[in-house]
Length: 180
Ligand SMILES: CC(C)(COP(=O)(O)OP(=O)(O)OC[C@H]1O[C@@H](n2cnc3c(N)ncnc32)[C@H](O)[C@@H]1OP(=O)(O)O)[C@@H](O)C(=O)NCCC(=O)NCCS
Image (tube, rainbow, N blue to C red):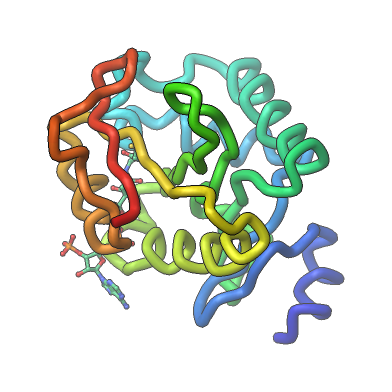
């Protein structure tokens, strides 16, 4: 399926297409998909706030994700396989923000457990970075990860991010990782 055909099939704005995946801008109708991912205890094992409790929380988070794009020209993406572009399997991408006064990208990834162990998260992150980083030269990629979230730290490592050598953490005690 070509990118144009996918856009017609899903009615979504495509951000990037990789070998197996399609990344699209989040949109208002994604609340249920967001809740399926963010309301699952498995995907929030290392999140001190725990899973989202109801779809209202997912809607609120989604509204933030949707608003990032027109404001910043970049943001988190909904991820689907090219085979099933209408099924969201995860969220991944870059959020432009300020960390200790420095403009940085926060790299984010959260996938349905059924999509783990296939290299999808790594593939989606690489596609998001390849699309966005040339448009924002000089902005470093960072990720905030709990020390005990080993799956996430492994993925960050595979993508070329390393933990701060001095063990610097953010206000939620997450280790600051940075693209080497
Ligand atoms: C973090 C998270 C996205 C990692 O998912 P993942 O599927 O392990 O990550 P990757 O996409 O890098 O896939 C790597 C795995 O796929 C396997 N794999 C299978 N086919 C593959 C392929 N074609 N290409 C690459 N890897 C492949 C790898 O061997 C590896 O498995 P292993 O870890 O058992 O060795 C997932 O655990 C998650 O969503 N966690 C909950 C949310 C979360 O904690 N987010 C981070 C907050 S800081």
